[in-house]
Length: 87
Image (cartoon, rainbow, N blue to C red; front, side, top):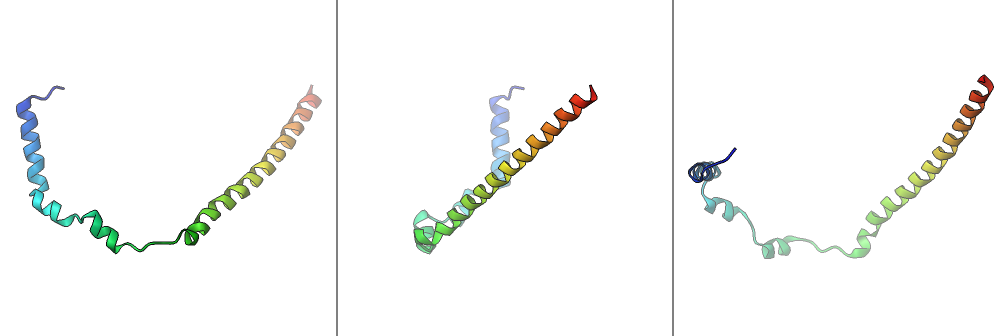
């Protein structure tokens, strides 16, 4: 579907009307300097625990995965034995 230049301008004007004046939008946006003044700096050592937790979780998942792989290999071995006994 091709849109003519006239239709495109009409669509843009409709969207501008629904968004309202641009002054209202820009007045509610704060500058980065103002936001930086309000933020609290955090020491890196305080955030170390946040990084530690996912690492421990991944180790636990790896251990669980290893156990499941061993169990799966036992099940497959039993399946092979049962298949051989059927024949």
